[in-house]
Length: 343
Image (tube, rainbow, N blue to C red; front, side, top):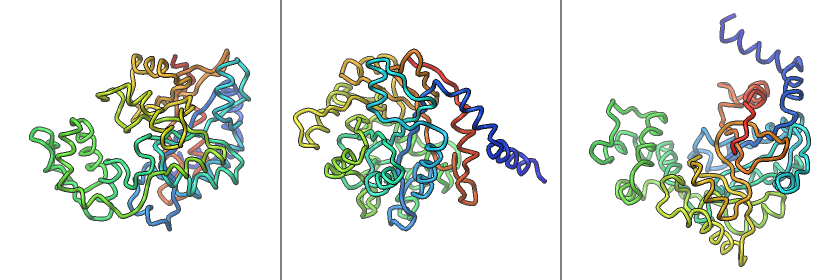
């Protein structure tokens, strides 16, 4: 047996023996775990062929994740976390909050039915300006165009401004594409728009990806609370108008929902981009709970903090090379996180 196989068997035994679960029950009793999903699709959905594979779970894997949460955690709602924050009311042992980022239509098409079947609440952080749009953010459009063969990495890299192109030879892999996308993200918005303009027609896959206002109402009615994820999905540390990304996002969401005022009490920072000053500005804008992408567990005694860590939920954390959902991997991924109060 190879070393890799022995290590894999050891992980399975540690989980199936119950020792890892016991460790979790004792160690994480006074912690709130917040998990962060993005997309979930059925593989027979046409959008599956163009989605970002790292941030999209097949619906069966989401359902298996929800079953795992039911076995090992007390899944709580945003309202319970807010009540604990406001009144000091204790959360149940090993609390877990399920969150989704961005505002994908598939959250209504697939995640909502799965959550209903499992009887679990969740929280969706919406990019206000993305509501009702058809195509996703430029990063996902580029990955989709590359996956369907409409755009090459070398071609895209060659369009970068002088001095911004990768120094090494560019290959046609998703890793190289992500590097080029990172360079695009660092450009000024108007410069990036000029770089991408010649590719515009090739970036549209013909499908609707983002949530509508009607679907947001359906999600709320189904037990999914709504929070904000900025107005434009711009990283907060790069935002030219921070007030628009904070208070402006709430106003824009209210307009989409046909309300005079959106009562969103929570926000997650797009791309995980924030600093202490931005977090304080967000509090001043009226957000009671702010969610980061710092992968820590949140202590619940003597109460829940206002700045909370979240653990990203990517495909390779739960699915092996043969496409099998791995509860043992997920347990090791979540149970051993450091517990730390961020503010």
